[in-house]
Image (cartoon, rainbow, N blue to C red):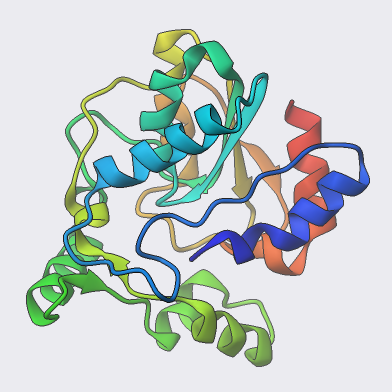
Length: 223
């Protein structure tokens, strides 16, 4: 997924006086290639965007796999970070990549990488209907499917060698969708890696598209 997945929430936040930057990771836009990209490229990109824009007092918000690049970037940007917020996101464990968080997901990730010439991982429509957005209308499910691009395989297998951001002294919050059934582990387990309890919000994994006002309000409430 790309920056487009955050646009509805970004509009709500801007209407409430907040500056917002929504990022698309390398390899996840048309005209860019996913071949050969790894997690370090995504971390470098987030760090570069914050530094090039000279942003300060930043709230980094991670969704889903985005917990990996955001966590890696937060450690390198500590002096610029006000808070890290994970929304239906993986809180990485040191040395464990996305493919290592769940055996079933890991098997599917490795099989996709092995079967594709550019070593990528795609999200099938069935996964959007049954896991990511089971409570959403079919038209929205199909729209999201049409917007997604194959994820660079390195993003899914590479790991970070850093502790939780809270161990580095950075404030953090965890927002968990009440209907999210697609996380690699229960959301409260990810929140526990930060030493906190999750703040419950409405909707399933992609509710920022269908419930942007509620998700924006939840973000503002924790920062």
